[in-house]
Structures are given as structure tokens and as C-alpha cells.
Length: 464
Image (cartoon, rainbow, N blue to C red):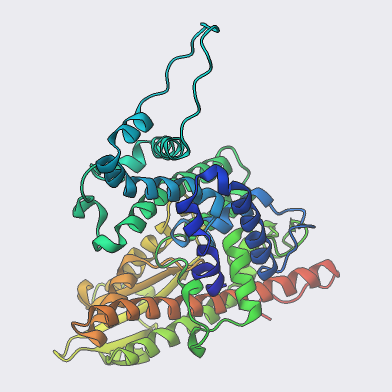
């Protein structure tokens, strides 16, 4: 999957930039179809005979959405064609304008109004390079004001795009321009798909749409994990389950009533985290993630221990709730800084559809952060600045406190080496995301086992 995303899916980009979209459309669509079937096979389904509950058009679209938009990150060639061609022409326009200003003027001029004077001879066809340039500028205009605003005043006739708008070095700015166009297109596509799924849709469709909310730089980190490093390796079952959750692929053929809680046991696996009879699965996921956080801290050179009693390091808050006075709570991970300050890291993982927060990306993690800080502060005298609520969501999205801690750990390990710092941030995010997905597989397997036993008429225990 990683090779497909980073290598195979991008190899056709040269032709998209060098040829008008009309000339590459058929080939681009054929490549997209092949990539969609490949991703479907990795998810354990056949698009030729898809599951009855699968929204095939949505699956195809999600396959090609970037990771930050909640997709599989497999670049769609047909959807990229206009942006690639427009960016290539925008790069070439200053040079064409210098050598052939009439060509550029003709390309940018609006088409003449239709005429009824049929006695005039038909207009001569435009030279191919003029027609191609006109098609590219039309594609640029078609992206709408959002794309143009992202260019921050970019002038295609300037000697070079403004550095503030493009970023990077002059050598990579042509590709950067294409990325800006593509980002605007993909952001708009994600918003439209979410709106279609949420507008008047029943709860099950809304739960499926929640997979889109797995998008940001941390939500798809497990898809960036290199399998060459064992701690970052997902086995086939875990990878398949994670991909199904992300792309809205059902695990079962039908929805059914849950005999434990009386709610709707949906076929997409959402019930694995919503049913009171399956609470134990979340504990396993928490343990796997907490072990990974401890390993990450030690790799970053931090002095860390796990599962130590709060009372050994922090006094109880005199105003603690009465029902917590005798409860022995343990710190998930305690980090001792060289200055002597003790940092409490508490892992908490929530499902993305927790409460009403499925409407907003990262809202579950944000709510979990506040709840965790409040819980600890109410019971122990710990400054809130020394509490790191490492909040995550089922699909992998990290809360802001978790992201900041990952950056701090990477900085502690890399020092002033910016390249090493960037690599470590991605490495640590991937490790945590992989741990969450391993825990998700355990929850899914337990849910599927209970589903099978319920169908056979002998319902298994909720904690078995």
C-alpha cells in the first residue's frame, strides 16, 4: 500500500503535466480503476461483486482522497489532471509570454460571442499550443476562488511566483503550485461528500460518514508506517480492518438488533465501541497504546515509567470528590525531566462518534483532553501544565496535547537537526497510530464473534 501511494500512483503525473487533460483522460480513468480494485482487494472485497451495503461511489472517491481528508491517499489521476496541467501551464506562461506574447494574449482572451452571420467562413482552428494553453487557463479558473485565494496573489506572468505564496525552493515550486490546486479541489470534494452523507441521512449513514473525520496529519499516520520496522508493522488482519474502518467498508452483510444493549448493531463495526457489552476491548487498546507511548519516551531519551500510583508522587486534592478518596489511581506514564519536574501522561481513546462530536474533526479528542485534565486535577494537586492528556480517536486522530508532546519528544531526540526532527515526528505518530489500529482489530474480532454467536442462538458473554 505504501509503495502504491508513494510510487506507482504518482508515476503518471509527468504525462498529466505534459499533455492536455483531454489527451490523458481515458488512461487516467483506467489507472484509477486499477488502483481502486487494488485497494478493494487489500480491504478484502471485490468491486466486481461488492458487499450489498457498500457505497461503491463513496468508496472509490475515498480511495483517492488524501490522508488529511480521510481517504486512502492513493492519488486519483483523473481528478488530478486539470490541476496538474494548469500548474504546468502556469509555470510555462512567463516564458511563453516572453517569447510569444501574442500566443498568450490569444489564449487568455475570452472566446468571441456567437454570431448568426453564417456567410462568414468558419474560424480557423487554433494552433495546438494555443488551444492547450487556453484549456489550462480555463481549468485554473474552474477551480474557483478558493484555489486562487490559496495562491495569495500569484501572477503567472511574473518571473517567479512569490516565495510567500509558494514556499519551498524555486526548483520545487512548480509541483507546489500543483499541490495548491489539488488541495483546493480535494477539500471541496470532501466537503461535498460529507454534506451529501449527512443531509437527512439516517444514523447509520452518518456513522459511516464519520470515517471522513479520520483525516488530518495524524489520522492516517498508520498508512505511512514503514513495515520494515517491526513495531510499525500491522499484520494482514489488522491492516484490512483498519482500511475497512477508514473507507466505510462493512464487516457484515446486514444490520441487526443487539441482544445486549437493545441498540442497532450496524454492519460497519461502529457498535464495537458503542455497546456496553464490549467495554473490555477498549482496555486492551489502551494498554497497547500506553506501552507504545512508554517505548517512544524511552527512545526519545526521556526518563519514563508506567503504571505508578499517583500517591507516590502527588498528594491528594483536599477537595477531591468523596467517592474518589479511597480509589487507587495509577499514572499511565510518568516522565521525569532533568529539571526535576514530573510530567503525567494519561492515554485516553474515544470513538469518533462519541456523543455529538462526529460532526467536527478532532472534537472527540478535544473533549477527552478536557475531561482527563479535569479528572486528574480534581483528585490530585498537579499543575495543569504538567498533565498531558494524550487523547486519540478510533481512526487515529490525535488531540493537540498529544501532537505537541510528540513534537517535544522528537525535539529532545533530534536536537537542532531539522531533518531528523521531521522524521522522528512521523515515526512517533506512526507508532502510536499502529498501536491504536492493533487495538481496533481486537475490538472488531470480539464484536464479530459475538455477532456470530448471537446469530447461532447462543449469545456469548460481553467480556469473553
